[in-house]
Length: 337
Image 1 (cartoon, rainbow, N blue to C red):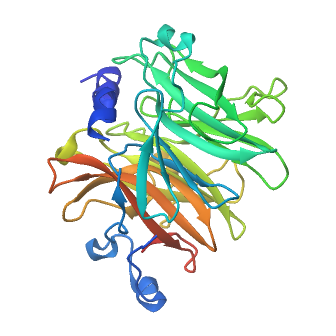
Image 2: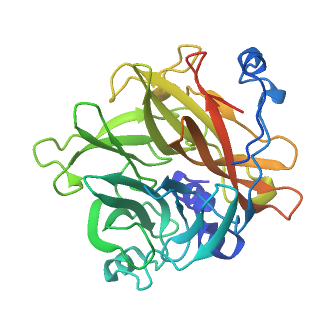
């Protein structure tokens, strides 16, 4: 199957994600440090969550008032909220009315949002795309509250066409210590890319239009997507989802990570293999009923880091559900627990 058809095969079921879309399980730190990411028993079950937990590609933030806001793939960006990070309820989509420009990409549904709070306002990056091709675009919305119905459409940030060798989906904004803004995005084709963003507009910086490569799988499957960047202990860590999503219990998604000393890379896994050459250290993989974890984001919350993701429930017909785990960094690499 061609890269184009293969990519959209993994993404086509995003159309149905709306309809099929803490008290974490902790273990002592000494046990965490003994775990190796490649060992099957190293992958923890998700922490307990209840309520409206059918989601795909979740991104979450905690407001100054302590409320958790979660957005996800589906419709005008599906919304969930919680006060305790355990019980989640559903609300209206981010966009009650879809921006008109979405139709240029053959869809009225948005994918893979990324929420953050910058300069006194909430920013929501997301993707829209035509199935079966890499005719795709990353959009931006802003809000004073982060709540559904409060989002103002800011239009297109970056796009790809059917002749591009990259795909403008799965955006993630990273703001560095020096105040520079970076947007990573992409999947399949030639992998994950990064561009500079102008903090005043939230769009590409006109004085730096380079498109940098930070992860790729040049041999075998092209399946790497959903980048997410964080900086911890002097290193930049790039999380990404590998292999196939959106196939229910047949999904093979998994989360891997690499790290670098510069935001633009190069990123290497724990074995020294470059992420631009099929590298990546496992963080979460399928185990038991928890199939194909991925579509992840990382959230810092009350003294701990969380990995927020979806998995396909093997005990519930492969429905995509919310996963939350904490991350331990004491080994220099993130270990989920």
